[in-house]
Image (cartoon, rainbow, N blue to C red; front, side, top):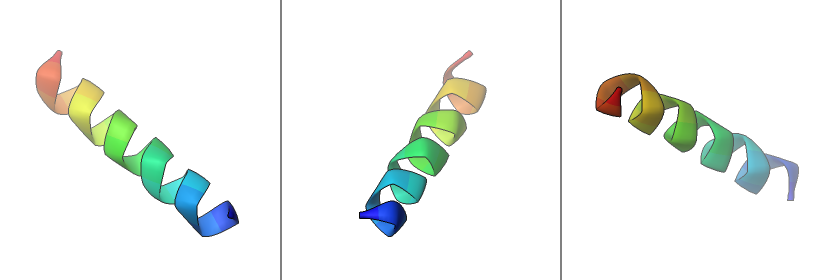
Length: 20
């Protein structure tokens, strides 16, 4: 579960950084 959370957080951060 930890890995899943980390992946999601990374994806979200990347999207936010690239989106904003």
